[in-house]
Image (cartoon, rainbow, N blue to C red):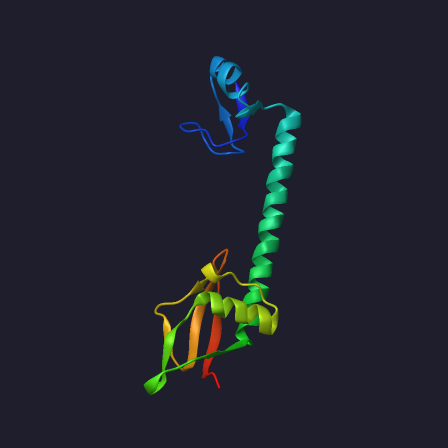
Amino acid sequence: MKVILQQDVKGQGKKGQLIEASDGYARNFLIPRKLAVPATAENLNAMKQQEKAKKAQEAAEKAEAEAVAEKLKTSVVKLTAKAGAGGRLFGAVTSKEISDGLKAQYGLDVGKSKIVQEEPIKAFGTYELKCKLGYEVTGAIYVVVAEEK
């Protein structure tokens, strides 16, 4: 019996997949637990529509990520921090502070988990950080750390 999986089923397949299952397994286990639905013409059509909608949504999200990456190229985040002797900062500039600075200065909402810092920023200066925006789109964030007066 052909069925369309509604959820991931271990040993059978992933959600949205069309699989061939034995009649008893499908009727007595998969369908009553709402793990699958019979592969009727109506259900197959619904599955294709869902796949099409999912692809369109992914394309829109990728385009949005690329637009954010373009805006990041021209955006320089200016942050201030307290410092001790020798230009060393008290603490470090975190990715959360950078994310908040982007939102406040440019209105760009980039999550702190998307900002990649190789090492913490502990001195004044200009830094270039990578930002993974998803869908294999990366951007560069330029951060200027100045002394707080």
